[in-house]
Image (cartoon, rainbow, N blue to C red; front, side, top):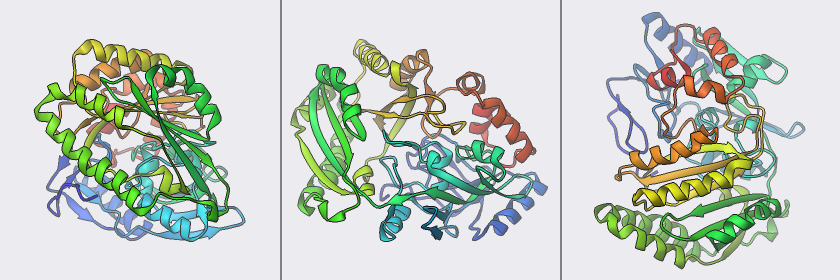
Length: 442
């Protein structure tokens, strides 16, 4: 992204600018054997190793302390199995590159999140998810992994080989090892149609369940201080690419480049200086939203470029509690007197079997809260987090939250299995950092 912070060669900083490190030994391994050598050397010296992706996590989950492994030498597709419908790629490949290569091969992931800047390893390790579908989380689409453990062992895992590791490592937080390759289940490239339209708050709450039943994927945005919502319904149109009707180039530039990035970025930055103007600005923006429809290959519809730097907290609550929790968030916000210029994003996901996935064992309702990166996010996020916790919410591992291991263990039935596997694969805590010590225990 053009807005990423520049750092010295021995430094690291995440995209939002909240976390940084310096004085690092920086390596760019090109194979699992080179990763293994770096891990073995660091372990012998009592040093910590962290594989860094693009730094898109808002938390310090990827913050290195001593040795930073860059993804540059671990990019690209390794193999395609059209009979099994799987694709294996190096873990440092960015999602946007992977999606483009899959398109060239006539293939696609089933579902994905709305940002594609992350590396494959970073995206699955933090529980990146989309909305709707048979499998929302990227990790639920993973059928194989190769990783280097804290003892220097190279392990290959599938549902049949080292299955105990496989079921726990797909969302591994970077705590179990350095992932070197990932095998995804894929399907033929398909067209996705997007239908966007505004709704009143009342209609959005009344019709939300009908919308999610009527569309393959649904995204909804609420503008704080306003009584309006933007809904996005996505529907699969099959594999005939000739039916796609993408936005004209001028409209795409106007909507996505100029308005959603340039104008929105300038507006929210200016509103930081005059927060009393935020409510009126949000109400005006919400009134200006109009309907829009288009269709294209899936990844071009699911993902968007975000050049406006922001900070984010996201929680998954049980699906049946979602609308109640959203209503409570609005009520708490309106009582607070806070001013927030960014919308709240609302998504749903089916249950999965990935142990540390936020949708493990339950259908989920996601609420994502954002602020401009120069705005004070702490009071707003703390207020929303209190509502999320009241409903058994699970925080996104790569987004801001205050929970620790004592809070998280009751939320995940296999939390103890995960920490036991961590003890086995990384007994000397080669891969730990303060964030992991907080959420998993030292």
